[in-house]
Image 1 (spheres, one colour):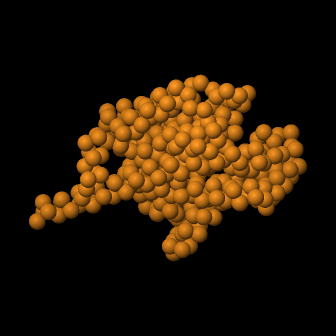
Image 2 (tube, helix red, strand yellow; image 1 turned 90 degrees about the horizontal axis):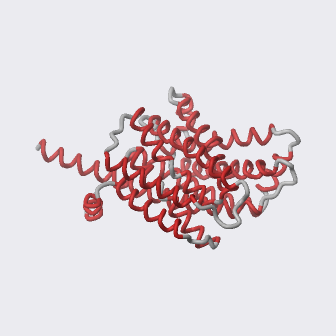
Image 3 (cartoon, rainbow, N blue to C red; image 1 turned 135 degrees about the vertical axis):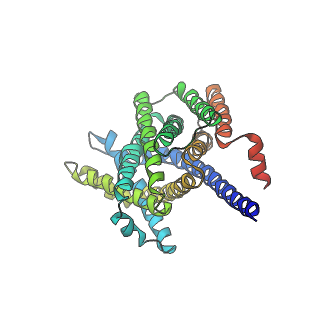
Length: 330
């Protein structure tokens, strides 16, 4: 009886891990798509402000997280979880969730959006995909997650492939291309820290509530900065954009963002920080694919080589190929 009970527990744990893997992959696909869509939105938002180079990305980032917060709130209202917002914020883990929101949102996400603005979505995605390596190290230190040699090699390969993708700047790239690369790297660090902190908090907090609070706090911080900027030009641009067709576009992109983050947060809790991040990093591949499909991104030899290396690294991060086949056949 004890052996049978143990077998049932193992089967449930395997099923739980499988769902986490699928959610990680879905998160990567959606994030790759909305990165490209964000890049397509930038030319539609213009500012007469001399600091428009920063104001436009700030307004877009604010709306991006703001619409995601609304979509997640709607989901939590439908599922009856909305009361957990207040309870969670009154709990002892509130500081952890709030700090993770600030690091991942106004720091991490704004770095990513500036990276997209200056370097382009596919190249920014390639650089930010470095976050699993940082997350794996932090997960090992703070969450005591064991990092096997295979997983470590897989993450290194995935990151190496991402850097190969970003090694050669595209023709006609922004003169601030390498500034965009640096800011994308800042985003990678922010997201790695956020992932570890959020997973720690989700030991006791529902992942849907955690990401709902994350997006809401991120939006409020962005909005506060916009309102407090002198001249009110940034706030006027925000109001104009919200009430335009661009606002509708950003609401749709925000839905993809919300779904991606819901999948990501849940997958980290289901399959572990290292594996979830290693799978989520496939957004670099999807950003290249959707960039080619929607914007005519030129496919170069380094791009192809980088994509292949990322795929190999991702497979190693997920697990032994034979183990993957067993998962698929169950």
